[in-house]
Picture 1 (spheres, rainbow, N blue to C red):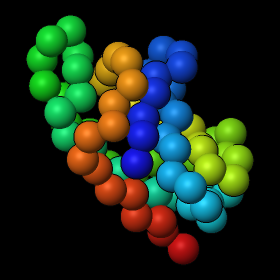
Picture 2 (cartoon, rainbow, N blue to C red):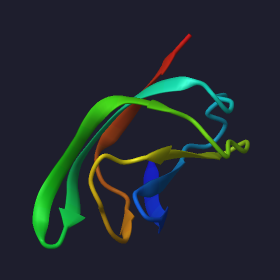
Picture 3 (cartoon, rainbow, N blue to C red):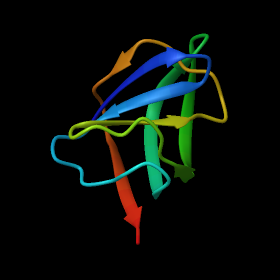
Picture 4 (cartoon, one colour):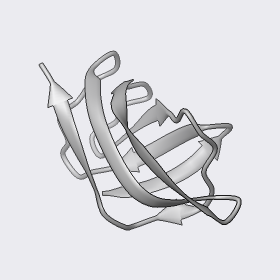
Length: 78
């Protein structure tokens, strides 16, 4: 699971062969994100956009920065 902020609060998540498509609902848990030096936790359901074979975008409720290769999980709602 890799994460990168591309636009304001738009996060690109990289998971090889994730299998989700635009409009899918995913539950995302990410811990230890940076928000102006303050640890941020994201844990909620999001709608997928800009899906490719290995990446997809979600809109974060809080601003984060940089590339984050830490702990997290994504659960797909079908």
